[in-house]
Picture 1 (cartoon, rainbow, N blue to C red):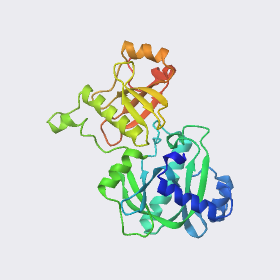
Picture 2 (cartoon, rainbow, N blue to C red):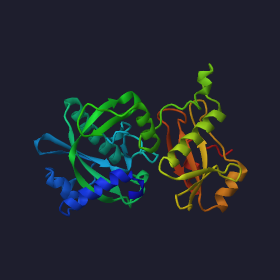
Picture 3 (cartoon, one colour):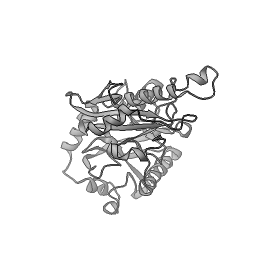
Picture 4 (spheres, rainbow, N blue to C red):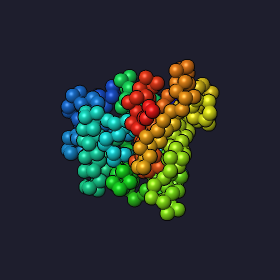
Length: 307
């Protein structure tokens, strides 16, 4: 959604949109040399004529460095959606095809062309909501390139403009907090290991899960207020103060494979329309993922112990 895009990026997108002919998202890709664009409207990367690579850049995840350069973190995890949960077989194949083209660009040392777009609904729902559609797509006349490819961290860094520059570690970490790539290992959950223990305690895993969720929501400009003791942990609201969710957060990790709901949390799930269960798996690790469950879906949550 436009409100999730850095204003500096949104300004450039608007300039691109107004300066060119009015084309549909498919027509834009077709005019860039993808002859079968109409047969692949939902792809996220394409191979055009002349072996030119074209990739979608979601504007909501574009970051602007201190020097004004744009960069984008690309998750190398093909199995999990940015909004939490596992991809289906079609989504996994689409992600693999995209990464294969980006890796091809990286290995060759050449750049790729980009179409920059915004989504009509929250970006985290782009793969899980059937109403997710392109809001605005523009052709970027500036070339992009893959500046780094780091499978050990499950990310690649894509940069707009000339090669030879990469964002700082601090800028990458800040981008992780608001983007589509999991956070690095949390010091909270790994406090036990730092002190010589082998595994984190349930309390440390829960603390790491809460830390992850708060960073996740605040990274998108939402307010996440601690409401523990009222039948839920966090009250999530937008910039206008409208309450969006009342969330119970639970974390699982090696050594802490399950969780229970308290009687107060269970009772609240029945009476509170905005109540949701948010489960963070592998809490405190660099591959932490989350998924939100409605009250009717609690039993399907991984690690839920009804006893």
